[in-house]
Length: 206
Figure (cartoon, rainbow, N blue to C red):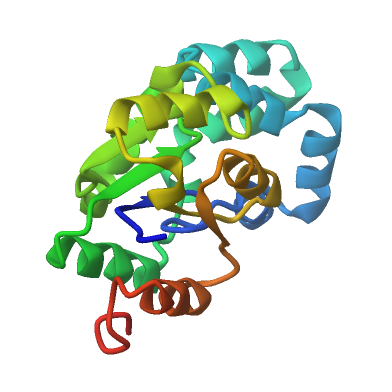
């Protein structure tokens, strides 16, 4: 089936997202383990990704754990430093697709406010033809509804969408709807998939 649009996840596809690694660099591994074992910070972040206010969720959570308050607030106050660095080869692939006038969408678990912050830091996040952001959609991957919303809005048949994501459960949910998929394990594999789909030449995919 011909690919009519390419769909990018963002975290760990276009931008590295490794909160534990960042916390280790700031407060040390031992302290980070204490924080993450005491508080489910990823579940906290899921609330943001579902559309709750970024500041409110993080600061309210921090206030519930006075002994860890400053550590939890790092998630808000230093967030853009956690969402880094960009994966430069993936960014070049996005730009190469745009140059070939291939429609490119984002489908990402991201908060409303955090996506605005990221767009202000990483200009390539403004390059999508359409950005489907979970915080606005009020649902996160791998819930089937988020894929359905994209399909309904973009008008591209599921079988003509090619979707890259680093999480197997997100890929499987898309594949169950008939999407073409790629489990992202690094930009070189994604580049090869785009070449194989006839969307980019090997030179364009470098």
